[in-house]
Length: 387
Image 1: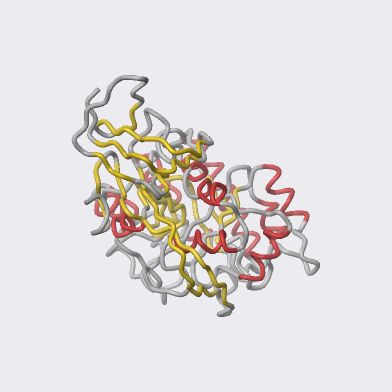
Image 2: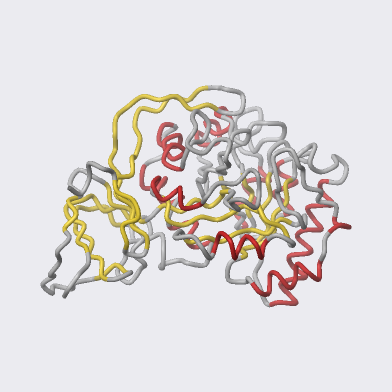
């Protein structure tokens, strides 16, 4: 067998298959190969000794409508952080999604899918708030856009925060978005999810979660403003546990104002782990500490708070790949999968991360990307790695 690359001697960690062992990964063209005892010829041997070899990271909550929104970043900048796929969390609306697809999604190396914000204009800028009044929804145009980009649009997004939706209308707005998703599914044969921004919601966390259906996304699940998922005694609200039982997805979606250290610590202590860990990256915090910075730094928070490495990796690989409809294709190192791969080196260092109240969390280690491969091509490599 002739291979393009052999990644040799690394600790291969693949939550999708459960692999955690020292072994080689063989890359042929765009995919991960299985030599099956066959001799492999290859001119490019990557020595990954002392490193972790993992599926390319997937950032499930980002804002990457670059130059179409004042808050968004260029997605391919995340490749150096080990991220090979991302989901945009509703930066584009009905009238802007086509531009987002043509100018960003189709032009990017990273794999991108997204949610469609129910406000037609999308999230244009930090100082321009969406209006989620259902009366403003252009249903006919929304139907056309979703039908055309059904392979990329995962569902509908609404921000349910005080100041964004009227306090007395938040529940009605949410119910209308869920009804809308079901109407569109019936017309188009789609399976649209609803993604809800839950920070400082005018309704309780349990009431909000109780409206959601299996597969819908409760994002910013560890936010600390207003109604949180944790009761005063440190236990999780029963309505939240019921929602998880029926299949609602809980996404950490860090952001800057959407993460509370106390909430996260209490939830993890109570055994409530996030289904997904993501960044909510926007231009004001991308590569800038101490709130979000990048996906590896957010992952470090959860390792610091006691989650084991395999569980953390699952939330940024296999779990989001499944929700994206790409299970077994990305988010895994199994033979036949696309060769989206990151080589990580654990570095011992102390650094401070903060939440929305500037409460500090001190991490003592960081997984630093040494090399990132997208579909079998090396798209990033540290200057002192693979010499």
